[in-house]
Length: 419
Image (cartoon, rainbow, N blue to C red; front, side, top):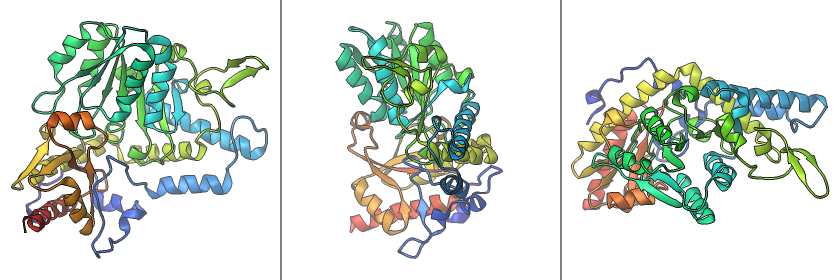
């Protein structure tokens, strides 16, 4: 397929202009070609505004927060607290006290599994997950079930790669305590109908945790409208820094939890024999928090909202739809997951007769960065009867030309290994 044959992208976003906001994407691959970065589902790149916000903080405002009474500490505290307010507003939480900063999405899920799970899950209780979950939304629940004598059950998918609604209804009918579900599959790109699922779960008295790592970069989040009990969000997938994530819970859910970690910052008082924790969210943020990272996350949210998340969603959807058709049209390529109307931001595929790692290596030699492996979703790959897959994921700085380059690279890999 040539560039002239590419489908038009129906969006107000100008990816070529946006790309110039990302210094790392302006470099040339060692092969002399422009870098084609198609691995944003693993980690998105950062715009200059995020890099400068963090650099400026370190240059002019850095100090530890909350306990200092000197000038720099007060400035750092003001910026850090403003970042929490920014996140709460962006997600439409009921208040900033529902937002806890963690070291990442995985840490947020583990916080819930320990803080809420240890206190509220009892022997014989049931926890539901889905087969499309990332290991970060599986392993903590397996560990919790082992600690508490509970059972983890898995909701399946249909042949198209969408959640099996009848299986979910069947499992919900026995009134489990928790459903832990991804908003968007990091392998199939499947977008789960969360509003419908959450309403069904709540009707059975089941709490719902949403892993929004793959959704938050691509679509608006309205927590009050969605009505989930818990949510985990990753910063580095939405153009923010690594080392910080967001743990959201409804106020009443935080009240049902015990602090996961102990130390400075999470206490109201300490004696030689006991302690009293402070209120949420601070009792769940022991130790020095990710201050610069929180400021960088707020800057990333500012950048996203400047672009308009609805426009981002439409642009990435159109680009993904084009990639789904273009990659799927290559002889010997099998695209995994549902049709474009039910997926978001990525296309995973396998090339008949060629291992995904070999294809990825050939693509890298041509300056094209994709992900190859099981993508921290081994149960899903086992279900699909493939040991590994290739994943090309797209964001606001990708273009139709990137997809064309990807397709040419796949054909080159096929040709090379055929010989």
